[in-house]
Image (cartoon, rainbow, N blue to C red; front, top):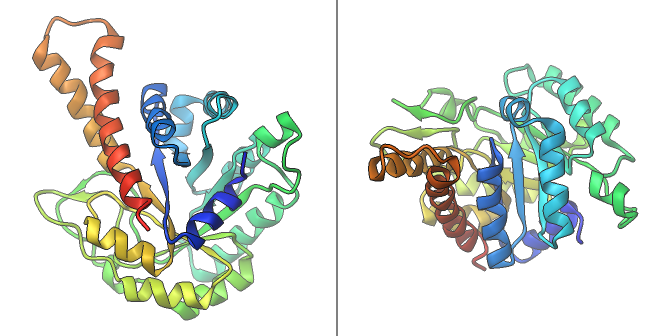
Length: 297
């Protein structure tokens, strides 16, 4: 199996992107890997700090390793680790990648803590490599965030002012990458976490993505806050240099809507595997549509 760095590099060369989808439970996980297997496309599964605590770190590892053993190209990422210790815990557990989110810190503090995570990850391999003795050159990737994207996957009443005022510049990206050594960079380019109620999310500044990508050509770029972005903006963002796209809010909405529909269809239903199936199927539809779009050359 390819390691995650190879998967992302291959996507970058092929002018496509790897889909990253967050999970809170095994039902969502099954929906994602089922779709990944069906389309024969790699996928990254993410858990935030809250999601990791709910599902359990070891359970998340076991789910991914089990799917990998069945031939599914699925990888595990710690999404938005807000402390160095949280990132170190995921690294020790053998995640494929970890993200240190220092976006609320000063530039200098963000660099300091991100660099510490990068240095801790050096020479360490994901759990599946240790188990199979495969691909000894694989290493755990570290992602840093620069600029303002927001902090929560939820429905928003308005666009936060910082989305436009705190976008990442190419100069900032160069300095951040050089000083931290991150493998992956999450820039602020008009994207935001969450979705607007009854409104279209802001357009992505794809020219800014191109400038950043050209300035840090060896660094992989990730687009956070993909929920609510138009198909056209996704395609332009990928063509401009994005190699990973995060989707979370869309999945949460679909999962809830599917389960609600199950109870509308049968209000007396008490068998979890019956009403959760509706949620699973709704998530699968989102994942399939997104993976097919991101794979467009």
